[in-house]
Image (cartoon, rainbow, N blue to C red; front, side, top):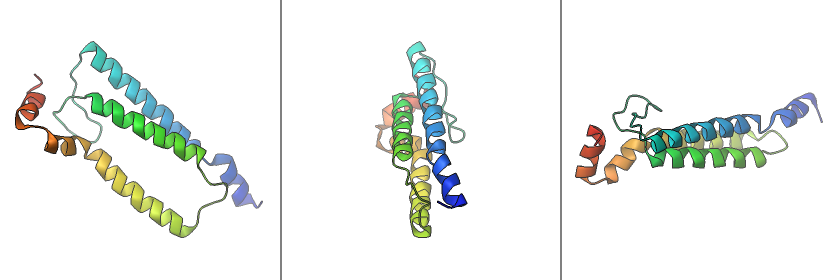
Length: 121
């Protein structure tokens, strides 16, 4: 293998593993706060008045699982430019959806539940 291939093979999946560990830690921290009954607003992707909830734990567990899948499924050779472009586009779309999760969930909540959630009751 050439120098680029050797360095790629040694590092592949490392970022995924780091992401999985961080996301698992975030999920555990949020779960601990929920068990204690602490109603803190989620500041994950900017200012929000909505308190953290179970869906934040679920989101982080799913993202951690995807990170583990990425680490396990990392290709042995560097990907083609087309594959990189597709992955970047899919990652940007998924990132926007994850960042907007609270707002998307709010669209499907009944109006009374939204008002209680905002007031913290």
